[in-house]
Length: 422
Ligand SMILES: Cc1ncc(COP(=O)(O)O)c(C=O)c1O
Image (tube, rainbow, N blue to C red; front, top):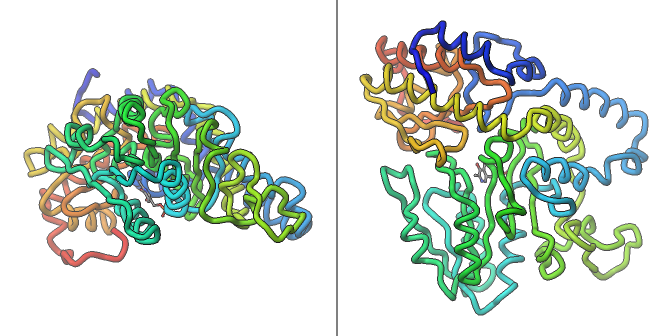
């Protein structure tokens, strides 16, 4: 990529950006706010706000009749839309519950398939909640399973792939990893890892929370077994919007959810006293879903589908490359280092910049510099790049304000004591 460090170059890149019209589809009430946290909570799509407005009318007017209009079918219908972003054919994804709950359901299902295999392989770069869920599940199953956590290299930026390969053996039941790791943004090679696992008779469950809407995913083509992910990040679903889960077609009839709720029953309104699983992916539903959130999220998916994952990936890589180039020029001399893979093929859609004062710099940026990144221990200033609405100008501004925060020592007045949400 051609690179110049001037502000006018950023403007030129924005003029050439074919995705720039999508920014107008989002609420941006403060144009000078540099929002680099779409990897935590995406911006609000106008389509979601409009859907919520209509939904309040439907709710008031239609009352419970709404379920027979389009509410009851929403988990499956929204799942089909998400499937188009993740390279999954029909009937394999439902939108429901939270990532944590879906991980519990699918890993429990996976572990029943071959009870002789008792090893679960994951890594230390995984989102800690995923590890907690696995630990709780192992306890619940009577401590018959062991969890092996593969370590990392290059200062916790990349996983130790040799250790991963060595750990997958004839005892391994399940490998579960974040496709894009939450801190460093390392992007696993889904096809290669899945193929390796299958060669050794193990199943794979991918956490796509930092991938969905951020990088192209080809679940079917990679022969993935299971996947989960959230919708409030790059899918812009809104605070607390429900997650999704994927079970590949050929496993669906062999596995069961450990939570036998009525939404996963074959005939929920027959109200039979014994559970019979619904055919296909529906059996992984549990109980009543957060319809308001679900429908708001459904509307937010349209801009992504219109833009297409290939164009989004192209821009995402241009944004991260540009950000890294600016960092090398302006921030490296101030003590920042890159906490994200330099190789583009292994990069998701966020960039972590490491600095010993990362926490206080993050605080100062939010409190007084109108920049919103986030902070992940011990020293990562995490910058999320959402190709639908992040501009090159915003990145130039963001880097310049980070530079000023440090050179003007603005961060020094903030305590090192952490706020609840960082
Ligand atoms: C990679 C990853 N997995 C799991 C979770 C947990 O998601 P939830 O709170 O919806 O259970 C998160 C939350 O940010 C995440 O980033």
